[in-house]
Image (cartoon, rainbow, N blue to C red; front, side):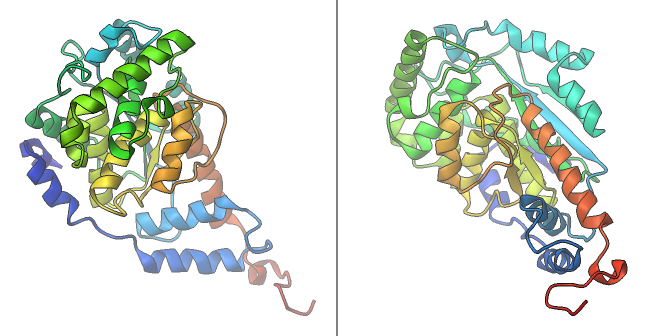
Length: 344
């Protein structure tokens, strides 16, 4: 991904997005055929069967593997945080990055459980984006460079990429991205985030409405939505999604903020996030509405709203279960068990 370093414009990103590879239909069909022969009633493992086929399709091989999962967490600060839209100060972003490095966060424990590598990417934490309720969050070059930075997080040999974020006020940015892409009142997209009360949540919605009105004339372009209403870590996630698609690497999206970043790529090119699964339904109310918009069904709903790829790493454990069954179960012929419609 060295070429990603030179990306400084949206035109270059659009050119990349026009040449995205498709899934491997042959590998997917081989995986489906194996599912049909395993010692179980057809469809009885539910979405675990779907997951195994999806992994085979995007890894381009059967059997699929989850031996090398990789978690990438991008951290950035937002100027809108100064308006009090979060229960925590912006300084917590850097403090939590330190906690990730020291191994004390939830994602560290989940990565250990899943035997996954974890990388944390700090993105100019001392230089928050502009307050998007008053100006564009980023200029085009900075937004494009943030996307390129995210692209470089996609290493070769990864079985699945779990994406996450850390950034105080990024649920405000996520709500703004969704409102900018899909319209409607901000109240439809705004939630309590880190735990703000109803009064502050109403102010949060007012600021998102103000931001969308300010940038309305440019919101027909998904990349402009990102640069005006997003953040560096969200742009990096969008870039990582594109790079993973080019590398045919399956992606697990975390919660609301991560899925909002993916929605920008979904709006940019139809089908561009087919290699992504959403790991869980965030407790943020806008997430369910967003999943409907992008046509995705999350793997689990555990009421989580932590971010930092925690939900994505829980889903990695589900992927491991899907692959263990797909690869390890006996076929009817191997086990000497009568298949459907056969005489005993």
